[in-house]
Length: 106
Image (cartoon, rainbow, N blue to C red; front, side, top):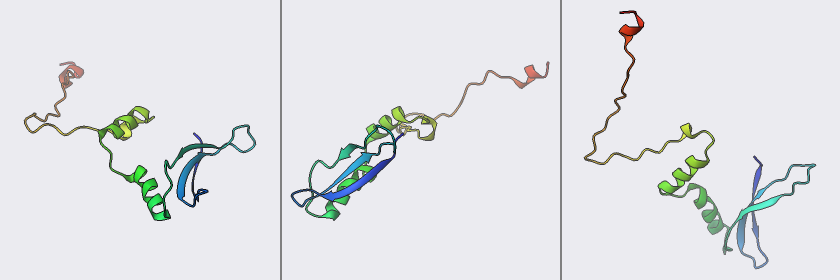
């Protein structure tokens, strides 16, 4: 996985923008690549920062977590379980075919 750098800057029209760059490995032929950037310029830095951090800390629907779980190399760390419907019974019962007496030779 590559290291990323976040840059904020003013464009040629004087508007604030952000971009994320995947940094190439030093000494290799791999160059730095812009992997994401603001789709528009902002009149001030505060609005640009609100836009940038809104991406990472904004509110998302269940589609975000579903996509994350598809990507996540360790899906057991984050699990989405929708709440049960009000009329659905909640059960945690697990059927167990193991009987202790069979282990004791009884």
